[in-house]
Amino acid sequence: VKNRLTNGNPSNRKISSGNWNASTNTPIEMMRLSVWFLVLLLLVICYCANPIAPTGGPKDVDPPKIDSAKSTPNYQTNFTKQPIVLTFDEWIKLDKPNQIVLSPPMRKKPNFVQRGKYIRVEWPEEEELLDSVTYTINFGDAIKDLNEGNTLKDFRFVFATGSVLDSARVTASITDALTLEPLENITVMLYVTTSDSIVYQEPPYYFAKTNKEGTCLIENVRPGHYKVFALADGNQNYLFDNAGEKIGYLDSTIMVSDTQTARVSLKMFQELLPYKIIRRRLNQNVVHFTFNRSPNAIQLESAYQPSLIDRQQDSLRLWLDADVPDPWLFYLIDTLGFRDTTNLYQDSTERMELPVALAGTLSTANHPAEFPWIWSFNQPVMALDTSLLQITLTDSTHQPVPYVWVIDSSFTRNVNVKGDWKPDMKYEARLLPGALTGRAGAQTDTIQLTLRTAKVEDLANLIVEVDSLDPNKQYLAQLLTKDNVVREYRIAKKSQETISWRQLKPAEYILRIIADENANGVWDPGDYLRHRHPEPVQIQPIQDLRANWDLAVRFNWKSSGS
Image (tube, rainbow, N blue to C red; front, side, top):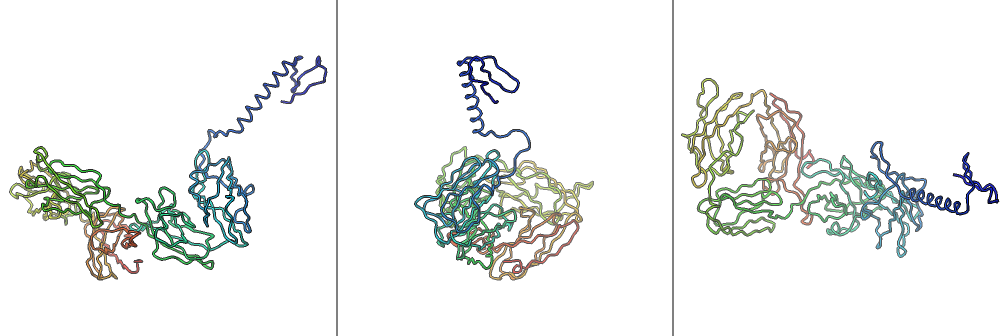
């Protein structure tokens, strides 16, 4: 609004704005108008100084972009010590400034000042830039837009105090050591110092993060020797300080030159955590232990041995007999120094026995006829009474079917029933009371189960010929659907082997071969400080295995990249 006085005569004073004319005003009224005008002006200034997130419209999903015209030029040479100003196309915030890495590092880090749309990098007065050196300020994921938090990933500001920028490059390919799948958002780090402890103590000299293909490019590297790591940096501090973080490493340094790109390939693994017991309890003569990971390596040290040691996922269960000592002193140990002492006292209520009951399903469908029918129970099975079990066809004849049933010696809660099963048939098993006896004389009640076998033409067969193996090693051949192991076969010290997997359900399978170097029957990850890499793994996809197919595949261990 444009206001003016028409003349200096108080009797003729008027305030004009367009076609609006005020009546004659006294000096007091004029003062009031001036005050209101100043208040209005201050409100406008305050409103402009406080940004308000816009409302409505589509959600912003784009990260901030650098405004090069209003920023200190990137990739410049002959740089002298001066503040660096980075201006963006929208309001930003600097999230977790500790993610910002300067290489080569200074004793005292620069100060990063963020206001509105810009970041100002201020150098410490006591620090001087080295002559003829290329510096890189890597912001990692620290720059985000103000409203939606969209991240400007891996923004770098590069400059040289000399006439030339360092131009050496390193490319990296990162995969999971067990699945061989590419890993995204992994920090690949280069260190000038080659001590083993450096990854625990200092951020890297150079780094980059992998894309969806598991690859990354580190640029503007100074030629020289570097120690290389890959880290799933969960807390984003560029240190290997979390036992749950995956790591990959090379035993030796790499040589980086400005004449060709250095290429590295790393396989990542998570080190085994030290065993820790989360929970322990006694219930119905079963001692339950819950661990922080699979207890496969846990062994029992005791003069008394339970009737069954049951390992399931992260739990360990000890099934006790009636003759268990009271109290019972025993130890749980592993080969890496874990040792737990338990002194078990029981009372009469804890010694109560449950009847033997089925723990699995009552009905089994599409069962391959060549395989035994497996029954799982709620406790170890001690004895079977064949006279109290009958298996018959469920057709009009109800003809009895001959069978053999045995307690699984490796897992006594299971009973394997082997019969002359025919494809595409339905069977019924009837267990009368007392057919199975568990601990302390506990027995089954009446149980009735059904089995439906699959048609031959609904299944497929796979023959795998594996060769070029080291005859001094043991191997594990696994057939998988996604992450589930469907079949497994152990190859013991042979240079070649033929594996026949019959009556498979149609699906897409993956063949995985593991070099079981310590012959313990499982894949073992690595251990960085012990300089032990994960056991080698090779994978070969199997084409879509269709119903009524017989498929033969060849697997050459050496040519597959061991």
